[in-house]
Amino acid sequence: METIVKAQPYEFRFEPASTALLIIDMQRDFVLPGGFGEMLGNNVALLKPAIEPTRQVLEAFRRKHLAVLHTREGHRPDMSDCPPTKRARGRLKIGIGDQGPMGRVLIRGERGHGIIERLEPLLSEPVIDKPGKGAFFATDLELILKNLGIRSLVVAGVTTEVCVQTTVREANDRGYECLVLEDCVASYFPEFQRAAIDMIKAQGGIVGWVSTSDELLKVLAGA
Amino acid sequence: METIVKAQPYEFRFEPASTALLIIDMQRDFVLPGGFGEMLGNNVALLKPAIEPTRQVLEAFRRKHLAVLHTREGHRPDMSDCPPTKRARGRLKIGIGDQGPMGRVLIRGERGHGIIERLEPLLSEPVIDKPGKGAFFATDLELILKNLGIRSLVVAGVTTEVCVQTTVREANDRGYECLVLEDCVASYFPEFQRAAIDMIKAQGGIVGWVSTSDELLKVLAGA
Image 1: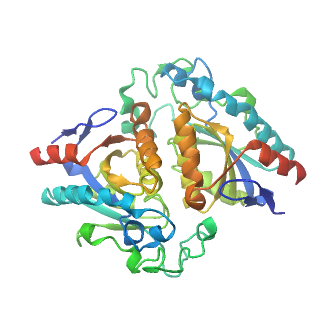
Image 2: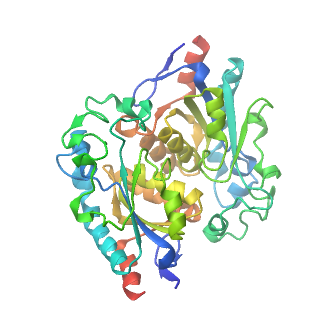
Image 3: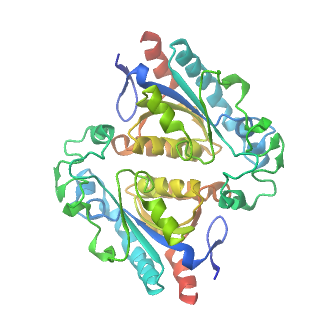
């Protein structure tokens, strides 16, 4: 049944049965105090406001038995899937693969790489482990979405201008219609949060739509 | 021979022999007065300043016999490669595939789809026809770069926050090191131009490097 949510640049229409919630990189190392993100000098308090609204949307999707997928950025322990250029970038003292505050940085299986407890995936919810910023590159995300019959994505997670917008741009090129919930995405840089949201909905929705968790929860409750 | 160009967030090091100039979507319909971009209400005068510095970089690459590639956004005349969601987006009166001011909008072979005369590709320079914003999606760009032995990209073209940054994000995930020349890329929206450039070089160059045509031409002249 077509559902309509108030959005920008105009209303977003979707069939719940062919819509998935995609939660991007809500990993301890990015989101929590004492993690890798904070160690790099970022203020992780700026990401915290996105957690509770994302949890509410997650619960609404679960109540309705709609599809939910999670992503995590990170690499195999042997780092064979990490471009040397990525490892070298930024000339970090402690970088990818090195021992960080919550285990080896961005390595799968380490504590910092895991998703925060409040958004912990259910066993029935696919977790996409991705080596890049975009969740479609070198992953099985597109195959899984196709198998699930998904055509629309509701997007939450961090950070807005890096992994969120990269993934939404990939999805848009592939024909998925994306609704980004602006209170469910967050950035270490308030000006990038604003600009990335504006870029997505500009020029008639050149990349996708933008709304809020409240608007979506209202229509999901009624649907 | 390793070449070093002054850039942000820190100097960009590249081997000219494994570096390509990638010129994104310098098509009549986006760049010229009287085209589709202008018809949509955009001020194409904002893109014009990128043409001359791009031409100078193009000529420097040609003089040095370095790799040059061009991209064009557009679709097959039967539009089998155009997601229906892309065609519907923006609710345009004249949209993709319709008769526009310079032929059918974003259709290959139409006048508006062609690259502007001043940056006309040589027969020896691959032109990548892409159905999306990102030049890696559903194209042979990655195969061609691999065959040419390319590891670094110098990026010019339009528009900065749409096709340029989408492509640079794809390239970065794939391990290419990208140098965006900020005077050779342009946007209809000055605030997006600034923000997209800032997002690329933020956090130690999380997506890539930023410099100017002058800085690059200086080192190419000396190299």
